[in-house]
Length: 145
Length: 145
DNA sequence: TCACATTGCTCAGTATGCTGAGTATTTCTG
DNA sequence: CAGAAATACTCAGCATACTGAGCAATGTGA
Image (tube, rainbow over all chains, first blue to last red; front, side, top):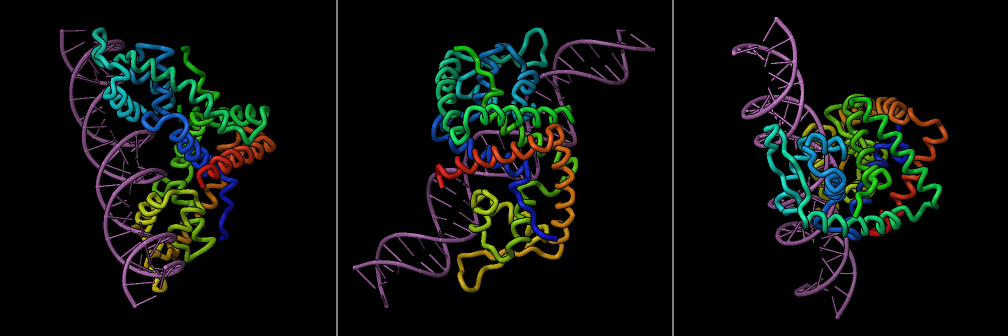
């Protein structure tokens, strides 16, 4: 059986894309705060008071992964994690002032970085790429809700 | 500063795409052998006798990552890793008979899986998606050779 | 009300993937 | 030919990301 051309394999390409992105992120956005961490800050800026379960759905990350990630952000005092007095199972999450400040800074930088990252494509191609990825990802996420 | 729409962030989408892919991979291809491991098997089927450095360039994985990954595959006796007698720095890598057999099996299954994964898109959109991802990833990889 | 299910979180274990430091081997240079 | 540079690999440390097991709190039905 002959070997296969990996450039026709979406999974391989997705990994390369993600990898290339995270390198550029480290160079242009932040070395301390990763892209998934930014997603969490962003979600909490939008809807303060979420619990970890809800947060994990918003950013499409596993509950376990969220727990680690939130613990690191809490350790850096970018967010507060307190037990919900109304429901002792939940952790209620809110950005601190530091967290909001960092989020503001990263919003600007990610915008700049995204322009560089997508620069090889023209405007229409950029929209097409984002739309097609979103469709495939959403459909696959549906398969195991 | 208002929160941002993550569906316009290629990094976030890339992570979701990769994540959705690896879930489907586990269900449709293999639970034991991951997609990067398949990429390694495939590269060694194509060019037996590569060293780890060359292999890492072929599959776009870090040298450290390759070392771990190859060690696991060697532990499962899917490949042989022997010190090059001509150059004592290199590990020469070759698939075993088991490795070739597994590769054959996975080629069939990945083809099936890729059809399911890309099913939300029509044929032209599928080609477009793969081409655009490849362009962005290649360009970003160039930025730091 | 009390047993049972559900829900939210934590913890252990594993794989991927990086950086940076260190080791061994080979190659290049003076 | 000896010292320096380059190369290939290994190892430690960290973040992301999963599964599965377990625990605590809440909700539900008989």
